[in-house]
Length: 389
Image (cartoon, rainbow, N blue to C red):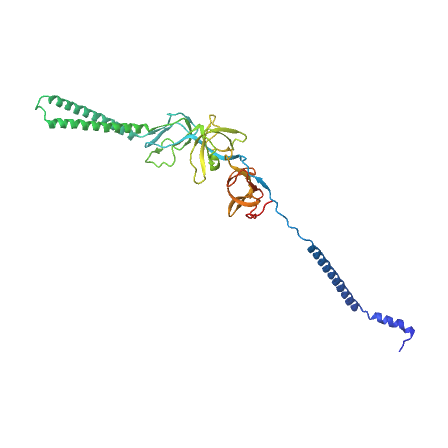
């Protein structure tokens, strides 16, 4: 049934009222989902088109670049600093050679002494008595020897008359002379020994130097029978010192006796000293593979002291005839050390042994010639026999 025209606006209003807020929210939600779906599809399409565009661009392979140089005979000189220690030119620890009590100590720590100077006097009364007894026995045996010789001389004179002296008496007198002579020699040796022992009661300096340690005082018992953990004194010659340095095997062969070396002392910054190589051990230390070298240093003003440390500068000229390559040309792997030689346009590994190094150059020893070419940016992944351009 057709409604009147006047009632149409009301119907329109009624239809609009059907769009409640709830239905409007649902409609907006579906609209948002539709927009997100369209965006995702367009993004995937764009991404696929980009990837397909990238796949169309072919990848170009990068050829490795090798740097090649000719092996040279360039001398690899090197200057190294080696630690050394000053020692007294002569040093002696003075222990008692006779048993006794310390009577007088004539020097102390820091005293300058001369050779033969008395440092200490010991007291041992029993030594004096034994010396007197030895002297008495010596005189006694001398008198007995004189008497036996005179008796034998008279028997020999009497024997000029046949039958006046028996042969047994003559032989007995001769044997008596020999026995008395032997006794006298023994007593004289004993007397000299006791006299020497008495001289040990006066301790004298064996050379010129300085007393650096004193461990006894008057009244102390010293000698072989007493417990002596420390020496009575220590004497050092300090006007001349020994600078002892251990030179590694790689550099010792280039040093020569009489060579002048420069050194510095950490206790005296800014000062440099010189000295000549005076002695070499001539053998290598098995533990450190080094040779001990001694440098004599004059020290009249005693500015240097035994026990100080020094830094010795040693210049090594390099091994004569050795070949040199950059350090980057040596490859160290589990297979060993080698360089990569370029031979007829192909890579070939050559085992080498390192020598002295200076800066970025190093000596190598192996199957190489001065005209050979090697790769100086060598790597372990470079295979044997690959083409090198």
